[in-house]
Length: 416
Image 1 (tube, rainbow, N blue to C red):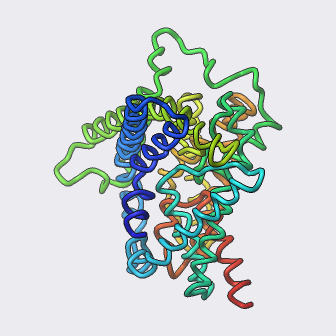
Image 2: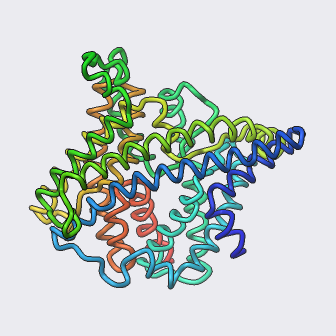
Image 3: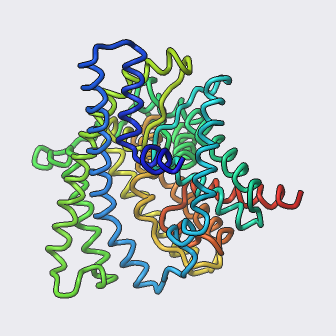
């Protein structure tokens, strides 16, 4: 079980390579095609992960600098490492049992989701178990609790948001399995009512001299450069001692832009291999099953919306964070959610664009940014003795929502 958990389920390239292989074998493809499809799917996931790691690497120093400037420190016992050290076995068992429940739901109900975002197969049991611990649950009850709630998320959240995803992509062959869920649903709901589909983010008129802005990598690099300059002026600790602020920002922008290019290439490679291969599983094992992928899959469809969502989300959410801290709304000191603003709000902006064009994308993302701050604040309060500092950096999304839900349901069932 430890081997399956750590070497396969928590290893996305191997997991998706194996799924591609199984799908191709079930379709009785020639061995040469099976080998090619298996390795190409794995390569696509490796490339996608490398791009995402470059993006996170460019963003993370901003988070750290802002935390340091605001005097926020990670308290012992409140991080993912310390929590996993004590409850990692419980999380692993909950994940394994939850996957079985998830596959049974896909096989025997109309909800045909197969959740394939490998690292999120770990983080949802992780956050549900944390909520259960906060409410006093333990032992077998905690494992079953974590498994059931995780399985329900993996099955139902991608299915609930499927129409929004299909409207944005025009492709009904896949779903999105990522914590952007609640923020994307909020963005899509708002955008549909206030937006205008006739004016798309992808149709923005750019003067010939500024045509380079049409390239998401270049636009992303420039945005990250400017963001690093601004943050360095506010929090000088961002730049390593002896370093040059301007060159630090240049390198951060270059890494971010290159990360976008690598990520998008990985997305295209993965989609081209895994979707056709997955048809074998859908036909033979879980009829009608649809794979749910990581949110970067969306970015390839409306890249301008991603950058607009990041900028709008980062600015508006930071304003909301400052307001919340000024009035001590949540009783904890929040920090700007840079990572969530890019990935989750980037996805929410794409969904908003699909429902309401440019205006829908901007307004939908703004409302989603407010929801993001509320979610991270409430979840930080409720997870105060387990993973509070971790959720303040990576939360404000479905992870926060499921943490809140687990805390409330855990108190109910723990009492029973």
